[in-house]
Length: 367
Image (cartoon, rainbow, N blue to C red; front, side, top):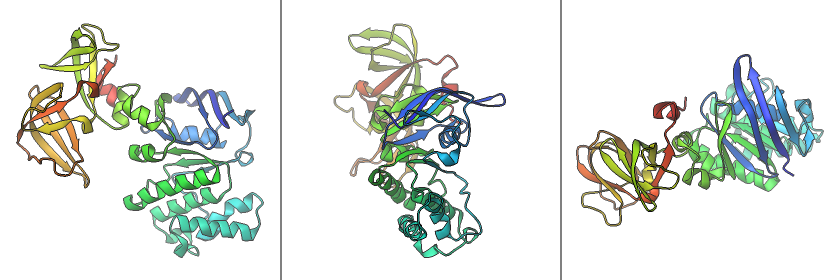
């Protein structure tokens, strides 16, 4: 059985419904990444796991034991908050050693574990410093090290890398995962960074308004998202509103404000309003008609974003809609703002969704 299970858990703060009848299983040794916009319930979820909050309804189980009323200190879990919560009168080393000491480990063992963990987060040189002598990013790394050194079986990470510079963040995200896996821990990692979630999570869970909108292996969620909101939050895409005009075999012809886009016909019905989505890396740009492409449209380059290992082009199509293309390949032709080019993508790369009752713009909201 999984070591952590939520069954129809609801949590309210006054009139605000933070989590609504949420159910999930987290397997032993799993690294789960949780994404969602501000106010979606991510931190509330972690605090319920940690025992810092009690559910209003539903049940929480650790190893099949009901823990709704078990105090935080009696759970085999450690919560690493966004705002560090370091002891100001203790040195960095003493802060990190606090966890194992509190769990009854010897002073020598605790200090040894603390020193090794500070090596991991590249803070050994500041072991004797006080928290107020460190930058915000360094304090966050100390809080992370304290969680890793605690010896708890369940590690609850609330945006653990958000205040750390980009280069170190890339390195630490994989080191944290390595430690979790080598130590046999289970980790719940809340993040706003989709790349972080895709690269370290065994599974991802997408929250919105206190409900799970999608969950599963990152590759599956990226390639076959459950809906428009998940597509936009997890990877991003260009979206088109249209009506299904015709279906021919497995192909649907969708009229989208003057364009006719070929899309897979499964689950689409004639005259139905739909939203089509195309991932930016699936959109090709050229000056000549490309072979083997189902959808080819003329457009004008409106802006270009240089991203180091890639370039993103924003193209305005003839109907006034915009589409984004991300080009990773070396040696691909480069275009400049104002160029008239051809935009193309395959039918198989088009994702089709039912039109949302509240409209596309409302469904795309992530704040």
